Length: 357
Image (cartoon, rainbow, N blue to C red; front, side, top):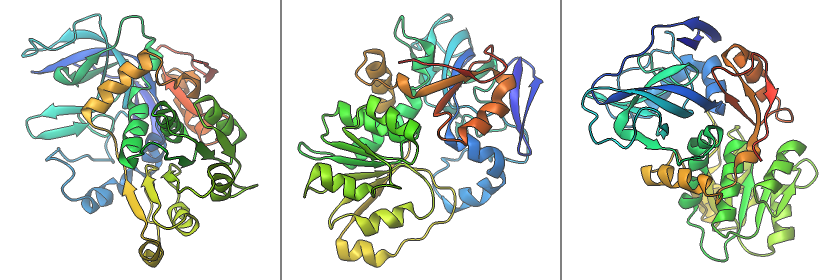
């Protein structure tokens, strides 16, 4: 099979042996996989993973060590077609020929292995991959596999909204309209949150925020996000979602928001950041962090996308085959050009437009 290997900060497409399913596993053909912002960072900063892992003691579940200096295949936002079930898979919910999605981890005797950040279990920037059969969820009949591939990033937004504990009458201010910010907007709107105010420097991303449910969008270069909220939401305290992941944003939000505001950090910043704790103490701010999702949120997100309750297709802006991944990674660094690009192993060699809504 062909796969795009991350190797010393580069993507190299090579032929690899076809994977074979072990006990409790299946082999599947990749139909579509989203490029995540964490993939962009990992390619160039994978060497920092050891330090990050040490700082997050107790979160690895006993997983085998990941060597970022060795080859690995990224891609964790995927929809696949089941090809072959391995031994010990009786009673699982998928069969050969089914389309499926999965939480991107593999169950092993020594712990959970994160797909796309492992030297042993390759991600979906490949023609085929191994998965834990018990974690695979059948895609509803007739659902576009490209939409199904949005389950994983959309579930992150769903979980962030749940972490925000929004109650009737609450409004939301979403800072950052990349894929995760857009997923937060869609999930908040589907939950009946009103108003939803969104801020981003990119006109293209602000337009997508409106399509996904924002009641008001603002360019923070022209109007501070909190001022836009006050203009729309009045004296109410918003629940604020930080979906940028750039140093300094959390501190700015803490200084701007009114006392007793709830702030949910869902943007992934992989650099050191600084805040002034006194600001949070004096204002009695509630600062929360959201990561990933619960299994029931993942499964529910797939259903809600299939039924049109979560209309996230518009965030997809392009598609590319394995040979065009370098171009896609470069384009995603320019926020006015691309938002969510889907990798299709048999797709076009050059980045091509794609609209799902």
